[in-house]
Length: 198
Image 1 (cartoon, helix red, strand yellow):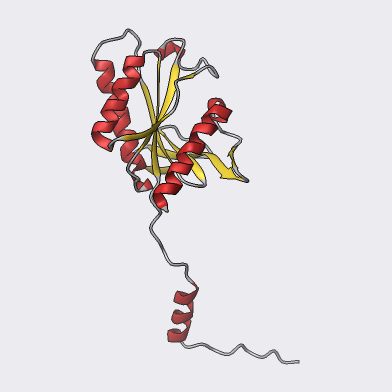
Image 2 (cartoon, helix red, strand yellow; image 1 turned 120 degrees about the vertical axis):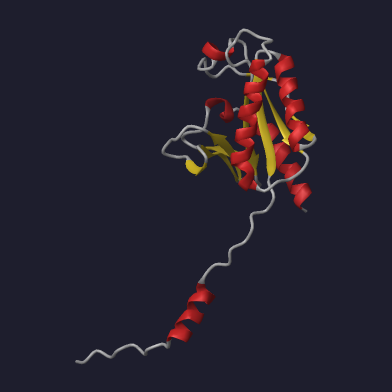
């Protein structure tokens, strides 16, 4: 039995079919810029907030001041009894800015340390990220198997995702980001974002 050859398509028709099948590239919807700030000094956190507002605009939402109790990893450079808070900014932004936000927040940490107000080598820690309706992304300077390289030594981590009406953890989610009180604040942020996008 002879096999029949499939009908040949002209190059023009083939290219037209290929273009029809390709997904259209679209810009990402604006996201909610988030900044985590922690320190043992309330005045350091307030300084970080003001510095960020100078560049990123007004803070729309701020969390309570949480006890940062899940790890002692930072005590050597930041001291004990650390407090952590989150800021969410009024103006929605393009998520492509994550690299720049991390570079800026790192520079602000250095600026504050150079003021010489405290003995600790790192009196203020600032971690930017962004929130969408589906996920929370954090920036990092450390490579891991689950992090995606962006540019200039900065990586992105999908820390939490939202499904079935609640924030869900990944296997690598930081212990403090598994807390229900954090999730409650991120829920407020998500509702704020949804209202801004509507």
